[in-house]
Length: 258
Image (cartoon, rainbow, N blue to C red; front, side, top):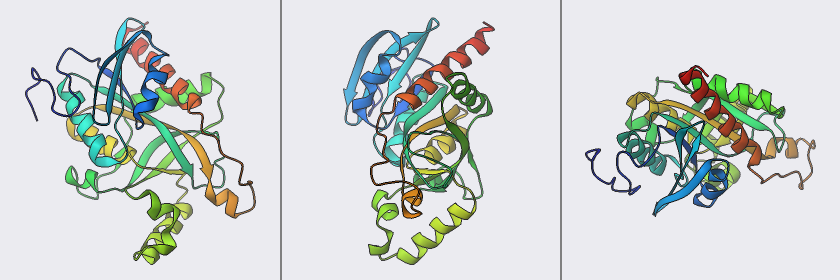
């Protein structure tokens, strides 16, 4: 890890240039949209997949930083943001439904994540659970309730292979992939995404407060069961963004006793 007085190698910022609160989308193109929810928003830097914006909420600097897709680039962002002084991080993104109870457009608040990634295993043994920090989790749930959004809180699955999930039958490891998918369904896992397990595990290793909120794009299980049509897709992430913004406000109020 670089000294916190230096510009970080990948994200291109140094200590004092970001806030303690960070919102982490995967897509660099979503950063400006999220930053529009902040006061006095301005662009900080762009390097590789890391697009960084700052603004304020209730007088506190809040940073938006994209992570790219998957665990490796997420871990780099978390490491370098933490070195620069961040201590609270909320992932905002999309997911695909697993549970039949999850519909397109639902907000999913992750209580924990199945560690079907590779990066988190560089930080903790497989027995260690990837779970959200309690204060962030409760603030996200409270935000979804206050906004009167359709939401569910529970475990998500974090994977490394997008096409391993969507086209498992054509993979050489088809049997293993399908067996695990069946297990996740039987265990009540809500949805599938690609970064939460890494965020939660790296965050635990670094002593950070972390959470994650997603908007369900589509649920292939509901489609296969005949419960949805092929057109039941939602791509607007506004509900997840609004939930994260309100959650950060709640965390700031709590720390400031407002």
